[in-house]
Image (tube, rainbow, N blue to C red; front, side):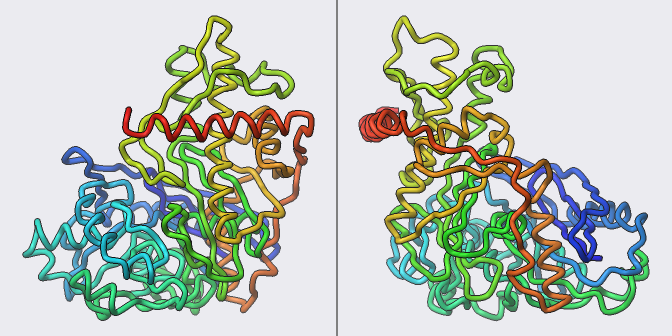
Length: 478
């Protein structure tokens, strides 16, 4: 058996799978986020340990004598600062904390960061957080002996080892993403040293063994290995079997992600595409990220007083986009705009714009934002041949039909089941324990495939062109 632990922002989830990858048991524990000041977002790492004890305790009820491997997945970019005795020096500054925006801009102005890391230095990344700590909490910065990412603090508790994996490390702005190693030049530019970084392993490699005391506590045997694991999206890619060039998934969650696997390193930082290492050796991935996907639909549902599922239930067959356009920049936008201050808009409102027309415009606006991500990835040479849809928004056939038509390719919908970060982490645990590789990261059974509506292709192309023009016009006005 193999366990996958996925440390999210709102909770920790664990799954137990068998040798044939059947899910045997699941467990979860909630987590809270502290926001002591505007723009701040923190968690106490000790709360993650308490949550892991709850989750492993529940999974142990199944019986863990056959446990061979554990894999880890987690929220990226967080900064866990430890002193020389591994004591936590302050609450973890999370991925969605924006206090370090000035520090991020300063680092991003140094050309070597984009050149070596392959990415823009975003305020949520790890490196600017340490610059902020050095400036505002110098006594803590001086005591910092190790910086760990969130899931890697769980690993320290599980194994006693300071280790991270390539995919999670790629989100720090300290990794030479092409070479898959820490960059001494980037660390030095940030006032950091290599000895403050964890050792790096591939996501499918062995990072250590479960400590005997924990093996005894949860009824596991000896020699249980802990895999390197992956950042949350990379682990989700392993979970849905997006591991080879040409494979991709679109996630319609609160935010939206277009995730594509690559067999080479082809960054384009200026496009706000994330280019990170994948959780498998010699593999990378790219992500286009939009900040409001199903969140945009939920916003419109609150505005109208109608539940989101009811808004989309009776839309019927796919229609050509109308005059009304929706720009989904409710909290800024990532790919390709990299604009934290831009805000959304309805334009082209008319007497004929009823609730159904406005709902279609919201779905189309998010769809066009995803097409922008596809175009940004394509500009780097990334080709998508196969696209899976996951996340809550994938329950809307109309939305998937719009995406298929706007992107000009079929969208595959998996059968019911959670193939996310915890399942991918369990697969990585299996790889580390058995020596298996990408061949076990198969794609899930497909319930159905939604094809583009060719009769609407020209209409969606024209509407997307209007959308792009509208986005350029409202920049600076909102």
